[in-house]
Length: 191
Image (cartoon, rainbow, N blue to C red; front, top):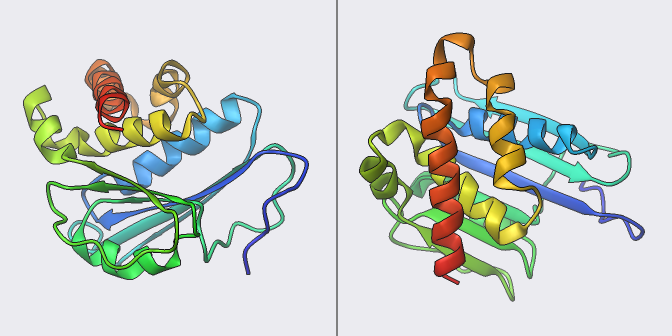
């Protein structure tokens, strides 16, 4: 059962979903770390198939001003969806007046959604390729989400990359920050 929105403080629940290898868990860890570093209460709940790369992968992040009673979310405020299978699985669970940010590079059809859902289609794979690496599509779409929700700044989030990436990948931090910024720019110009 969902923890209801807290009446006296901020509360945001988001499910990030796609297939293994798309950086779903990394995007969720980064969102959770940035929220923690900003003084918010956070839960992070990852889930992925046994085969990981190519299997299903999703995570739930809850960010709140006050303590969070449960990490379990059945009706999220926001969805970040990276593939068709995840769209089919999670779209119906999105709350009315929620936010759907999805990878339009891989998703063509959107099922019927609750009333008042704000939708942002982001060609995150294409944008990532223009930046030089298909592996940063997750950062592009996360940047778009952050811009739409205005939860955390791109600067704050980018500073947390060193906390969530293994040391051998720290050389990719500038490119990941560029992807976050480009995703935010895309959301800003595609309202």
